Amino acid sequence: MQERKVALITGAATGIGRAITLRLAQEDINVVINYSRSEQEARQTQKDVETYGVKSLLHRADVADDEAVRLMIKETLDTFGRLDILVNNAGTTNFVDHDNLEGLKDEYWDRVMNINVKGMFSCCRAAAPELKKRNGCIVNITSIAGMTGLGSSIAYAASKAAAISVTKSLARVLAPEVRVNSIAPGVVETRWVEGQEEHVKRLAEGTPLGRVASPEDIAEATYSLIFHANFVTGQNLVVDGGMFI
Image 1 (cartoon, rainbow, N blue to C red):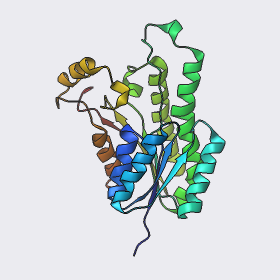
Image 2 (cartoon, one colour):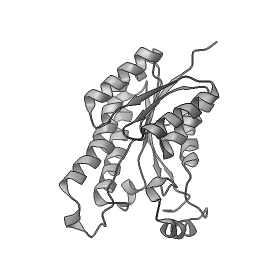
Image 3 (cartoon, rainbow, N blue to C red):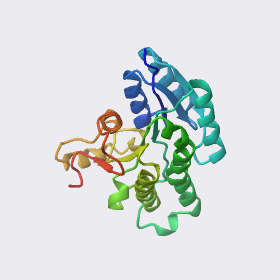
Image 4 (cartoon, rainbow, N blue to C red):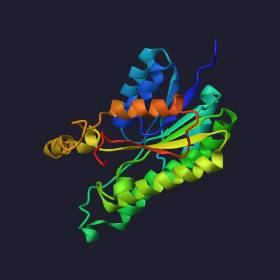
């Protein structure tokens, strides 16, 4: 029997990360469930994953900490002996109106860039040697904000634009062994938009497909890039229901 592939998903406890983790587990892939704070939710994700008969590893690490990232990759290899897929989903933001320039504090900039850009890069760098051995694949979850300049804050939009740029750079650097792509969701029904139901409803009504995305929509797009796009690299796939056509 062929040895199962292994995927590491950052920010896998809730929302998009959880949906991606479950989608990969359905395909008989062992998963590493990374989280930083949501331990209870991460343990539930692990319990749900194991109903598919695959193995899982729960690992707490802040991706902004490069040493912690390297230890996470080491534990992955110690546990499974391989790593084939990396999905960089961990992200953060602070909600600051774009016209509130003074409200966008230095600590907001630092945290959003450290997690959304440097953390993503650190995970790719630490995983690269093993992914090259396995002809592996990286998918980075960015955002339509990185293309429109809209979003929860100017800093967040900038971080996602940077993440798209890093994706393209790494696609060149890690080729031909490793494909690197990103997915840019529009609005997704996760806890990030809780309390903003009326705003989300208005956005959905203005979208050609008439709704905003579910986490499962993003998970399916991620799965497709991993397994059905063997000649695609360096691309940023927009998954927004046509909101920004």
